[in-house]
Image (cartoon, rainbow, N blue to C red; front, side, top):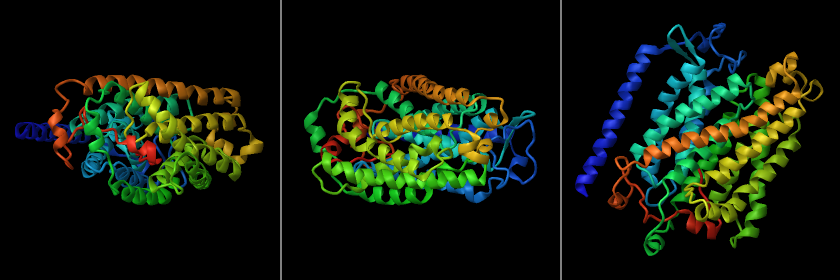
Length: 457
């Protein structure tokens, strides 16, 4: 085992060194600061369509998204009692690399001019969104992969995620400012496909029961993570809104959805589970689901009660999902969803896309007012009909699922190679970033299903 430990450290150290040197060299050769980061006009050759011309993407807006990814997502993965500190450290490692890599890859698609990538505050915002999708995917395989595998997952997923975003937002003109499709749906199902390919049946049920997660650490992290979600997530979903008034609209709708989804947890959980009061991890789940459904629809909803209804409906998904869907995923489809991303991000993201499609059909000057030109500029200009825009919004869903599945298949096949998989002895290395849960490792959701608790990314 000492030999394996040394080899694990050297693999991680070597890969981090190579990837960081690669990023430094690419930044030195191609990356420059852009006029987009100033209040001056944006060069016509650059894709600044998501830039806020009135606020210039000032630092507080981009900083809010960065804080959201760093604190909220980073804390929410640290719930496994045996691997909590290791998962938190690994999530920070993923963020450190993914943000750099996303700036480069997204720069090629959006901010490439005369052989250079011009970056500004918008580049960091877009990189944060892409990094959030990577962290969601990591939540599906958390505890069953080592940091080397997670770094490679981030390397591949950022590339595919950027391609999906470019097709949807730039080529098709789909409105998805809060990321129902590009972040929540894509990240969830990319991770689930990877998890399926990495699946190995449990061989020692007795050991599984002995190692059940019974600690209170997950509740502590859930409290802190949920507080950050309530503070920062509404602004996170509206960071890419193209106008200050559209941003305020998205923030308000996100807040209404959040409170309704939280209330839904207190309505359904006492019926499904024996506990009278939902635990903090369940409230955390509801918060995430309520925000995921507003990713596309946040800047479209024209009435507050619509956001309340959407939040109420999506708040029912996590408790129902962990009670009925998660066992089917594991027993029938052989998918181990460690953090329950299917229930909290995948299904709410799909519901958000469908809601956004419905609201697109209502996109008229009477219902949207002057906001129509901000949300659907081509429709306002008359160059695209409302029906055609709605069809594009709807077609973006299967396209996202297809790209997520293809990317997950390629990534899973690479990660399952013998060279990258750790030794089963690595599971005894508690609370280190080198531990990997092999086929004997318990499913942390087993007790959660019975107690009605859940923990999400």
